[in-house]
Length: 346
Image (cartoon, rainbow, N blue to C red):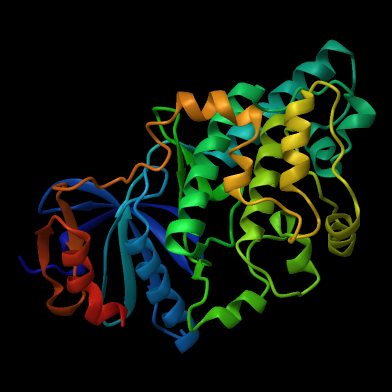
């Protein structure tokens, strides 16, 4: 079957990814809805093209229930495309901030406070006005999502030697079944690869960046551990731990300040977040160590079917879009997928 861009019907734009625009599309031959990430060639540097190929290669390597499924990659005369699973649901960003807004609005109304909610959130000074702010999610829900996030990051770090480098609320979707899905591997890289010099390069989003990134030091997979701590903090407090309208002040907070914890959090949750947000990368625990904490035990047991489970079990068929020849084929093994995409990815 010949595959061209004409085999896809673009339905709507659904977001901006790293160095590309993401569309919801229909793959006409099968009627399957997919997400198409497009990177234009016009004015694109070789570095951007290499980053695109690296993203496709890493998505091919990563097979995990909490990762968006990779279907393949192809190119036209004007653009490069990654074809991946369309994940329905809401971003964790919208869940956290919508919940926070509603809580604050209700609190203001109940206490006769006449203040703009958006201004309140922007100033990030919840403790002065709402000292008992209970955050966006109950601890049990937040911990469940964190276990799924920690599971895929542990898999990336230990099994695939991949560092995501852009863990943030906007790159996480909670699907209709309530499970976490990690999307957008545009900043990801492989530890110990020929491109390992990129680990000197500051990338990702400032509010989620680890101190060693802010200080322009060499860094490792421990930056993902830090970012996961930011995610967990946001879920249980409804705010980011380090934020200021002045970027330099945000930098200072990340490097020097400790996070402020509201009184409603359990001591176990405070301990977990504090460990994740350890300033020194050498002292910051790995996910192997995090999973040994008592607070993780029940959540891990409850979702053990997701931890260390590969998304594509043996015999599972998957459609792969091949760049060369633009052929659509059904393959069942990772080896076949790698063979089909090798010419493009290398």
